[in-house]
Image 1 (cartoon, chains in turn orange, cyan):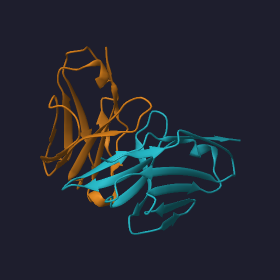
Image 2: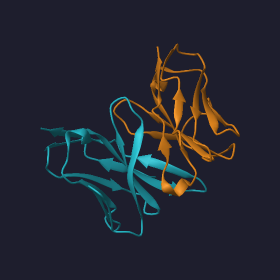
Image 3: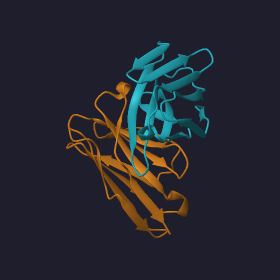
Length: 112
Length: 112
């Protein structure tokens, strides 16, 4: 069991740019969710993928998009970055969505 | 909509018990979770309780659920300095997919 790995750990981007964040889940974890955690806040649900299809989305605009691949890796893409997108982005995966998720350590995105 | 509230801060002495409280609004929540976040790290699942349970004990951790009042608590016995962290309560909802709704977190400070 290798856990959930996210890359990069830190990233600085300029407003208006695009960014791709990556996550590698444990083998067999066919459900992956992405969360945004602003400083001093709890994580907010962005979306969830199950068997490579998006099956749920939170209150985030379409410029937040994702992909899930057959090898249990996934991506979060954010277009037209805004200053308020600065946050810790957390990937979480599960093999049984009712028994909790394993979270990665996150990617700290700073938009300047 | 779903909402989870927690007190922001708790300070205890090493060896004492800590009790972290949480209230939630979604009566249809199936599972309720406690996560721990240490500085610069992701979220670590501590324990969870199914909504038809009143209590769950796991070593030093005791979870109490009052479904009528929508109140959840986490008791940590014999609190250690290593327990200093932010603790998040989360409720799950199942609208065909499972998302976690987190509180803003309770910062626990354990002093020697």
